[in-house]
Amino acid sequence: MALSRRTLLGLAAGVPLSATLAACGSSGPGGDGGATYWYLSGQPQEGARAGAVDTFNKAHPKGRIKDTTFQNDAYKTKIKTAIGAGQAPTIIWGWGGGTLRTYVEAGQVEDLTSWFGEHSDVRKGLFPSSFGAATVDGRIYAMPCEVVQPIILYYNRRVFDQVGVKPPQSWGDVMALVPRFNAKGIAPFSLGGQSRWTSMMWLEFLFDRIGGPEVFQAIMEGEKNAWSHPDAIAALTKLQELVKADGFVKGFSSITADSNADQALLYRGKAAMMLHGAWSYGIQQADGGDFVPSGGLGYMNFPPVDGGKGDPGNTVGNPAQYLSISSKAGAEEKRTAKEFFASGVLQEDETKRWIDNGSVPIRLGTEKLLAASKNADFLQFTYDLASKAEVFGQSWDQALRPAAAETLLSNIAKLFQLSVSPQQFASALNAATAK
Image 1 (tube, rainbow, N blue to C red):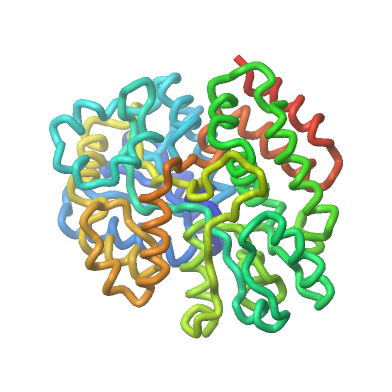
Image 2 (spheres, rainbow, N blue to C red; image 1 turned 135 degrees about the vertical axis):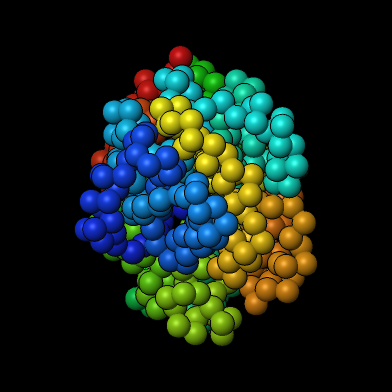
């Protein structure tokens, strides 16, 4: 996530049957010249996306955008199938990185490099760091959009006060807190493990904190046996030690992130902590009653690991979200999509909606809006975390190519279920990522 993600990675809300049928009917090139656009459902993020489309459509009655929403996991399957069949929506919402690279290599998305050259004001208005995951071999194939989403360690202040403990300042503290919470019948960590990418966040941080960003960089570059690096094995081992110590809520493997059940465990005091994306703040604010307004939610960066090489200021997650244009779309649809990129993405109303949702938009110059928000403390924390991190690692399942990402996610589930050893996990991933 990711976000997702990842938003994003863990979003809720069902898709009505009518919307699903509309998706099937409105996909692909052609039609009435209006552009089609699929994106993730789930409030509060869906409202910001839908609002941007509505505002654009009112200003462009002759070049409208038809939008359709999907839950996170369903979207990943649907978009992959549609693109492969040449029936992609005009505007493809995604996370950039490895998946975008596969689209580029298959000639499925437009090269936007020259468009950004002609619209330099659009590029200059966005976080420079957002363009990395939009770029393949030096060319830009996606419009960065929405918000920056580092992964954050959340905790329930009320539960910590109840048990009489303080937030962890090191991995040693994390392990020491586990029996304290379990003794009180409180799960140390909430986890929507069925969604798998939620579990992946733990490895992203442990790899970074123990070995630094170089460990995953070697994996990205396809180095032989990169997953078997001693620091990688140490990270995998520490994760399983946490599982064996009952660090996660019972039944985590059957909890989905799309249902937001993992979020509810935290704000209802059933779990003490949760590792999740910055989008989680808005979900807890929307669903958690007085939990967020009353100051019940605490948040911090992932703590250092004793003896680790990584900079504890580093973060991981989503540097932005991304919009690409299907190369199979008609000329008029492409024109509408580019007009949306120029005058519909992250305009004033949408920017304010993201900030009101507890998110930090990737648009430059929003400091005063952030400071004036009711969520100012969290937004400043997120802005500082994302902007000051020496390394902001992209979520692994987005950074890797889809086939390798699927191997990663399936083996992460096995790792958390203790059905593979760290060495077996490394062997499976070495085969999937080595060049």
